[in-house]
Image 1 (cartoon, rainbow, N blue to C red):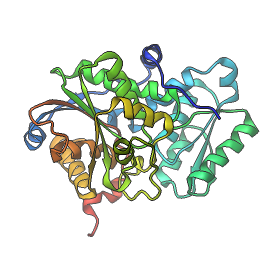
Image 2: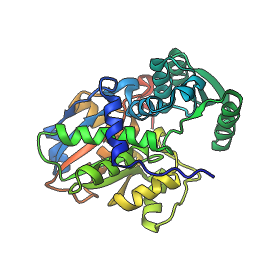
Image 3: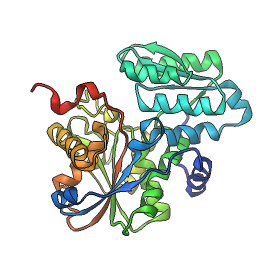
Image 4: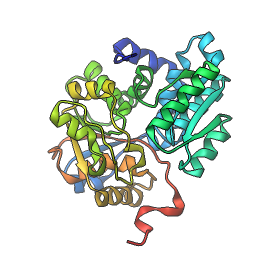
Amino acid sequence: MHHPQPPDRDALDQARSRLEGHAHRTPVLTCGTLDALAGARLHFKCENLQRVGAFKFRGAMNAVASLTPDERAQGVVTHSSGNHAQALALAAKLHGIPAHIVMPENAPAVKVAAVRGYGAEIIPCAANTRARETTAEDVRRRTGAVLVHPFDDARIIAGQSTVVRELLEDATRTLDAVIAPVGGGGLMSGTALAVHHFHPGVRVFGAEPAGADDAARSHAAGELIPCLDPQTLADGLRTSLSPLTFGILRRHVEAIITVGEDEIVEAMHRVWERMKIVIEPSAAVPVAAVLSGRAGLGGADVGVILSGGNVDLASLPWTRAS
């Protein structure tokens, strides 16, 4: 069984070089109203303005760019219902190579259409993890394509690490802490490793929905506890950690803050109303965490990673009948 190793400092630097001129250097915004609500100075890294509308483009682009010519000729395969699917499809298109994307049959139609729009082949499967993994493995064997996992991959983690490096450089003040959402742990792992290697004085926190709190429970227990029945609006955070990402979080993340569904919706609404930007529920989770005060960051300068902005504008959560 292959057990991937975390990317080292050199891998993080190489990812940064590969993404230069391909990934957007997204802005860092501030908001006095949200500062007042949080009792802290917040610096928002706006990956909702990244290509494909999410940070996932960074990891996918780094993964594809680091393939050998022989590997590229075979193309890439992954399983994803959302942002990683779009990100890998675009990265493959930009490199002129085939992409095979296994998507569960309940994937949002808008995301399926986006992946198809980037020229990828879509292979539907049943809506469960086992079906996704076995279908992807079948495609890999049939085509020889390289598997690019959404988060359990050092190349993906290295690509995601570039988010926080830009944030720490572009913030108008020296940051005391950073907080990122946790799903499978690719963004959180990249954030934690970049801080560890390049900004070791900064505190690192994760944020997670209470209805999908495997990372919080795993972190507290010191062992990997998967989430068997995640219940949250934050669809990007329903995935459980892998042994690779859990190992990184256990070593380099101080705490995982959990927030309720109402807090997520309220944070999303406040960002829309006050900052005039659209973020998806997953991106609202770290906002909710800092607004809750549960991280104990009163008076601090805090970097908040807004992970993406892919949301169905026809069914915003605060407009639904309760």
